[in-house]
Length: 285
Image 1 (cartoon, rainbow, N blue to C red):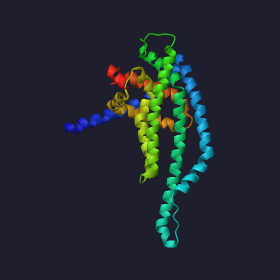
Image 2: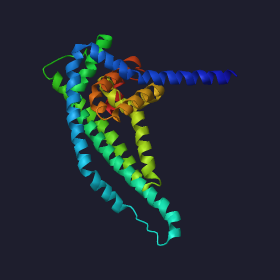
Image 3: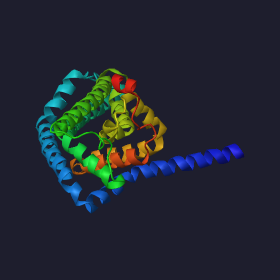
Image 4: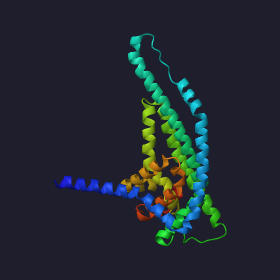
């Protein structure tokens, strides 16, 4: 009985932490609305992302028919030579049609995600400024504020943000391409690939939006993954909210600054392993 009660309490606690992670998004939105110093660095990324996502949507609309035809040519086309053969040819044809639609949907989703990631890369210096200001609004100071300032500090910070963002995007792109390619070769891949992509996004999107706050703390990538595991329920809640927002046209670019602010909230409130590592860890990173 005691074991069952402890399991129930743990389950209830995990649900509460999951909900707290999802609640970071509306909390960040309220913070951005209340603090005028956050408005400018929040507006620029939203505008840039809107332009790039709009371009991606135009590309998808113009090429969806060609993609569908190319996938249809790559897949087999079984033909029934008699009426009774439709008993097995019919389900196969239906399954192939569904596979074609799913693969085209994966290609379209990949184009939109690529636009979002490109926008995140291009606007990463501005988003880093936003993350710093959010942290100062919460705590009165941001990690790295005690570093000496000189004329090249802003340039170095911008280059640092671009470098870390490029590495994060390379990791996301590599996993995304691997899962997408697997959808073409693994049995039932067309049906499983979207599920795998969604699960990966929910699990690892927190690293994207919390990345700026973690970069300032010089947290190595291995320590970041350990931090995700240590805060699993909370980060999954935040990741699920971020994924749901990314799936809604319009919200995905309008709320990019909100997600970065929410990721900063996550790091500030649940630091766990998000502390400056040893010099050896910095060297490895």
